[in-house]
Length: 139
Image 1 (spheres, rainbow, N blue to C red):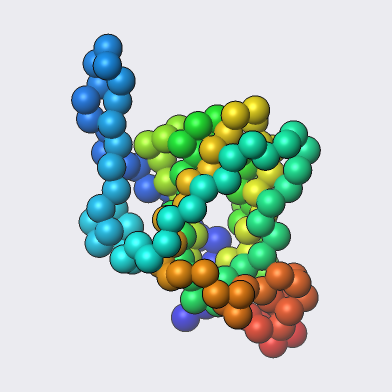
Image 2 (cartoon, helix red, strand yellow; image 1 turned 135 degrees about the vertical axis):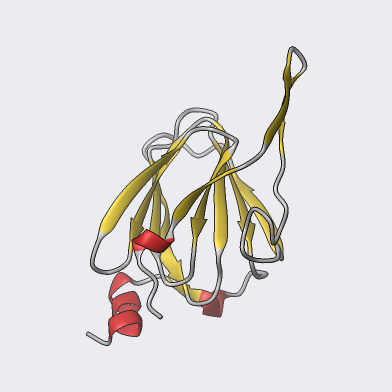
């Protein structure tokens, strides 16, 4: 099955403890996301105007969260593109395998938090868009 941008989805994370002390959200593998978490990382102090991402993963699945501030995720399946704005810490964006993603429009103080299905492996990346298209569609 070939993944499309329609397989990407916003995941509403539980939000509890809303009172004067703040709020709490949590994520449980197998409950809120369809994969076990093997890696966690975050991006921060991204200067204005900088773009991140610009790649696709062969096997890796991710849940991307704006734990602070906001940014846009441009999703591309080779046929369609869609931009999703993340700006709430209780929303995550599920990105399955073989979806090209670009991260843009970081606000000041934005923190991008990622839960990933696998540990880091350079061989899992398509960093060239044409290579991604060739692998996905053989065009």
